[in-house]
Length: 158
Image (tube, rainbow, N blue to C red; front, side, top):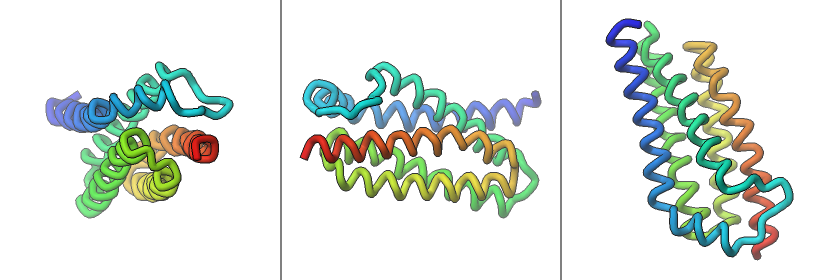
């Protein structure tokens, strides 16, 4: 792989993983309180599953964005990068809303917005690089499962 390609993959993967790590760091106390105090729904995975799942999802996001950044479509790259950064910011803030603020109902609405943004991102990515778009499908599926968990937590902890 050429040096430029390696650099783009490294940048987008590290950038995306760092966003996830910062979010986790800023919400670690809220996550601990959630694990100890919140009533959780059936099908809730163990707490240790979340960093593994998110680590893989952030990796796939970063690889997808790197693929986009290497295409020859400057306008497509720009649109995809903007959507990507917006959804990553919305993703980042969901943890703060859910874990730190414990606004479970608002977090569910926020998550619905994130789900739509990720769907838009998948469609935009697929127009530029089909594989990059397809790499985001597990993210959308996980968000669908997260919506079930978020909604159930909201109902069980009112």
